[in-house]
Amino acid sequence: MPITLQKAWLEEQVAQCGYCQSGQIMQAAALLNEKKKPSREEIISHMNGVLCRCGTYMRILKAIELAAKEI
Image (tube, rainbow, N blue to C red; front, side, top):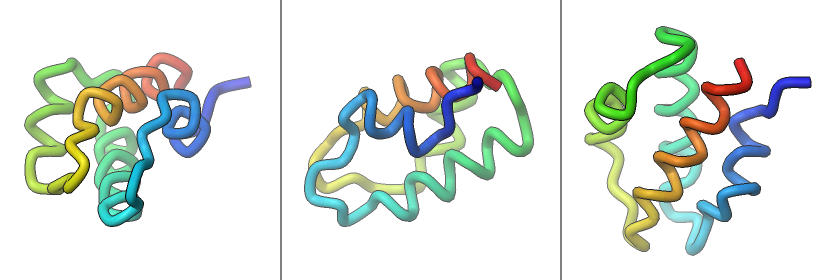
């Protein structure tokens, strides 16, 4: 069974303060709807506009890669 984006978020322990989480997940979901297997560079470029106050960008990147691998 494929891992969902939300489950990948939990597995990679992305959430800290929660300030950006809804925006980050929505942006990531939009990317994965457009492109099922985005490259690391495409993920970074697509997620560039959503700021994370806690700086969990590497965890966000890993979660998106994990979810994309399972699609």
